[in-house]
Every structure is written in C-alpha cells, then in structure tokens.
Image (tube, rainbow over all chains, first blue to last red; front, side, top):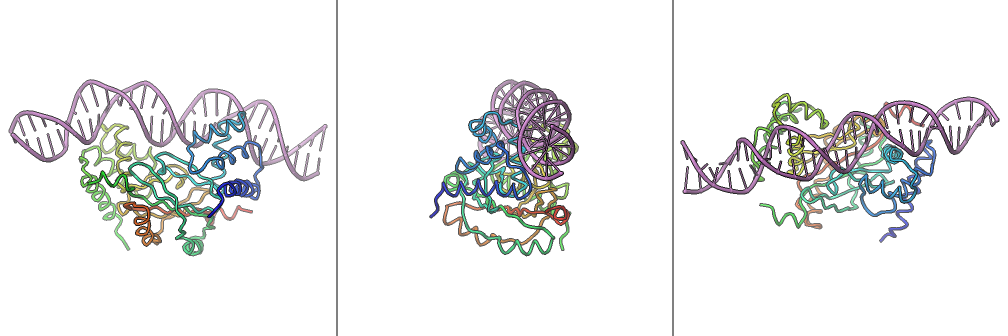
Length: 151
Length: 151
DNA sequence: TCCCTAGTTGATACTTTGTCTCAACAGAAT
DNA sequence: ATTCTGTTGAGACAAAGTATCAACTAGGGA
C-alpha cells in the first residue's frame, strides 16, 4: 500500500521542516537525531537512539540528543509511549496521529490506522481553547499468545 | 454531576478487586499504594506516590511501590502518561478509559469524557485476537495561554 | 488451629533515563 | 568584523525504575 522508505524520508523531512517553521535552527545534531529516528522501523528506546546517533555522528553529545527529542515532542512530530514494548519508546510521526494496540502482558505492540478522533479535535479546540496538533491512542489488552495463559 | 470522593473509593475498591480476581494477594503494601493513588485528585508522579505511601505506611519499601504500580498497569486499572504535566504520571482508572488534552508547551492537562473508541475495540479484538481491557487517548496541542506566544 | 508453600517483601545496589549548568561555539543580521 | 541569540558538549546530578536474595506472610488445606 505504501512505500515505507519514502514514508520514512518524508517523516524526517517533515519533522525538520516543522522545526524550521517554529523558528528553530537546523543543526547537524538535530538532523542526526531525526535521521536516527527515521532510520529504524517502529519504536525506539532512548538507548537505541543514542547508539544510532553516535554511529551517524559520533561527536553529538548525549544532552543534545535528549534536548532534540524534547524539542520534537513539543513540536508535535514525535510521540512517546511508556507502555509500548514495556519501556519508554519514541516514534517519529509528523502527522501527529498514531495508534497502537499494546499487550500489557508481553509488551507486544501492533500499529493500526483507523482514525477515530478527527471529529473530536475540532470540538475540543472550541471548548477548551486548545490549538490541537495531534493525538495518540493506545488500546490495552492481552494479545492472543498471552490470552492462552489467562484464567 | 459525580461525587468525587465516592468515585475515588470505588476506584480503589475496583482496583483491588481486579488484582484479587487475577489471583494476586491483597497485602497491606498493595492497599497502601492503591489508597495513595486514590487519595489525590488527578495525576501523580512516582515521587508523590512514594511520599504518600510512606505517610500511610512508612515501612513499605520503594521496590514494592514500583512493583505494585507495574502490577496495576498490567491489570489495566492504572494508566500512565509521560507527557501529561511534563513528567511521568500515574492515574488510577479501573474503567480503563481515560482521555486528556495536553499542552505540549506548559504541560497543562485537561481531562475530558467523550469516549470515541468504544466501537473500535470490538473491531480490533476481532482483527488482531486481542482481548481489549481499556484505552487511553491523549490529544496534544497548545493551550490558550501558550497560544498567545506562538507565531 | 496449625502448617505449608508459593507469592510477596525490604534493603540496597545498580541501571537507565533524563536534566542542569556553563563556558565555548555557530548562524544570521547588522 | 561585531553582536546577539540560540545551540552545543562535557560531565555532574537527579529521577525513575529494576535486580537480587534472604526473610516473611497470606491464605488454602489438613
């Protein structure tokens, strides 16, 4: 349906464009972090990102990686979950919409596409004065493997 | 509309009942953690929970608190967010459904009630073989105060 | 009631994750 | 070139969470 490599490249470009639009400078460090995020499929932990960044650009400091992650989170192009994969993970998602089905037993995570909250965003924006930039939906439960061991 | 105190008591009782039903023992330590979670409105950080637990029951160890939090997460009665309030927070929610509007700038968090994913759960259960126990929707954006400073 | 045993605990050391500080540096506009 | 502001790396620090293991206990059965 989609070409994953192009999606990833788009995600990286969109993320950097968003930073630029918000008035932030595009530095080699920030590019390295975004490329690290885009270079792997799925969610990555902090440690995985640190390793990838230091492979791409060894001189980038640890603090800059975390600063960039925070910046991307605030810009709404990066999502994080402390439940997926049973550790805190990051996922580059410039669309600001990301949905997962997470097994609370084994941490197995499945992405899905249905968007259920588009309509909601307008209503919330009006009611609370929020300027909505995206959303994240996590559905919890037990996967088929883990169900087998349940009572 | 609702009586908050009763809601909180219900939440604590439901949470403990869920643990018991899953075959876990109800110990004074676990009761203390659940009561600590239920004793404050809104989200609490790990440190706040640790303080409250040690007030309620000073002999409860740090490891037991985190073990109980993990147990409650897996049981589907506790939700956590690493974005709300700009730190990792926990929220006792036996219904398994919890929704927030989070300002990515200042961390301000507003809860809302609309449930948009009920229909989705059945479809996901069927498609992926998941036994769904709940979901968490987080909507990101800028609150009215922070909008004032945006370009 | 007492016993048995698997489940649970506290203490503590450890790891991971993330933040802070500050002097040095870099980009863009003058 | 100068200036101003945003950004960086290093490393100390803090917060959050995990692992280990001997000791303890809840709760079902005898």
